[in-house]
Image 1 (cartoon, rainbow, N blue to C red):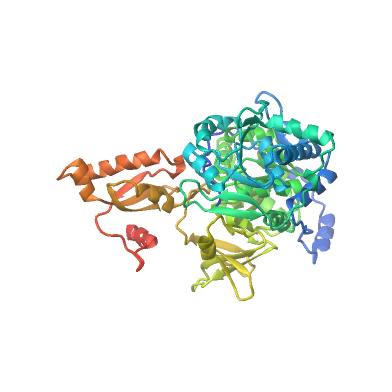
Image 2: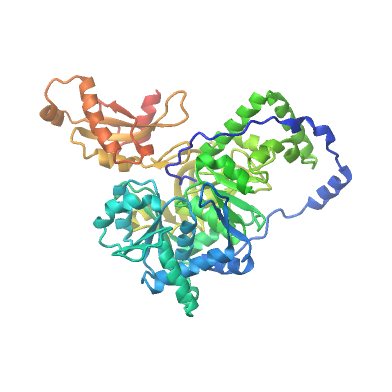
Length: 622
């Protein structure tokens, strides 16, 4: 799923492993008679789980409120020195109803656009659910955006309220006076009364509870149209060119329906929330899906706390990006190497794989030390947002954890393909979910072509941009809407999707962040010393990560006028690089340009004078 933004992996510690249990395989007793019986029962059985058929998130909300009232919904550590607080479904849904009641009836924000910005925290979940169940249109926004980009998102979305975490207080202060259209700035975890346009989240919550106690049940009586525009997500916030993805209630509900036949989750499961909630991957699959199934969600304090948080909360499933999974893989294997038992562990992987093939699964016992340091109950890891080395996925599967991969985009809200837990295929991006269909457009001799998606999760369209919508969504003769993903791949005989490249200009970092070259180029276009430029991800030998680079044709006349004649190539490079560094200060860190190449010839272009990016990049490889 090409949906994640800035997601840096800090250095976290993984405890030393002694791997004692890998030597105790002889103690395992095998009941072959029972195994044979179970194998016969499984033959011919439909492995797909029962599918759900929700039409709106409010339908899910009402059902889960009633069915799972006393079960744990959210776990969060509000004080670093204390244990995780457990919040039940009843407590959570009570707060959602209270917030929704006050926002709609006291603050008159019914059907308004409301920006939600902050780290993963309880108030974020409450705010988002209140939007989906009747308040208005949610605008989840990246907390890492600098002030100018944050202001741009608020203005473009025409938001009339901003719900923000305490950590974003200084950013909001910088832009507050530039946003006359915003009626309320609502600070999470604050008890402040309404002063001007500022008000505390807890104040609104308490007001809502008082209104409900007085008999106000209006919020729960709000009917939701499944096709109603409910979420607006900007693919990137740097310039006015950033696309806003419009998602309806049905799109989100269909995510739950789409996953249900492939992966079985229930009230005994707990998901570990480590990815940013403003992305559809985490907010849909990491929140709405578990909420529908009665699962709890444990909120990670931060990536440097990932190992202790896993041990404290004991999750059964985790959504992750490849970079995080790779970091865990490397740290675990480094400790195994230090234990001196790497060879034995590899042997035990082969032995346990052989036993599992005949129905004997002793992986949890043999690799118990790894399990314990991941909480002891982890059974599923889902990787998405970028490709991952197949050997890492296989290793996770080898130690007994189901390794699933997902594929989708913000435009598909996000799920389009997923690995069924009962049919793993390492290296693929999964197979089309039940509400979707995938096909390859104009496949070459290897079956590769652009991936097209038809899905119930497909967005309404791009916000205030019909032209851009029509470019990516084509309607066939039967009235089906096909989304042109811009990704290149093929489908195997079993319907599994394999992504082999990208045809769009988007640069995808190792941890799944999207960088849109056109946005940066637009900013560089304001530099008088640059005549023309092209931003791209440069492959550098020995590095996995693409280096964000720019090829620039100097504006020699401007340079001569401002900086003097007869300048050397090095001086021209330094002048332009100095200007680029000024632009870098306005960009989120991962978008910053790291390399400048002065181009002396013209760019290869189409007849409409557009730069042929891939032709230019190909020249570098020749």
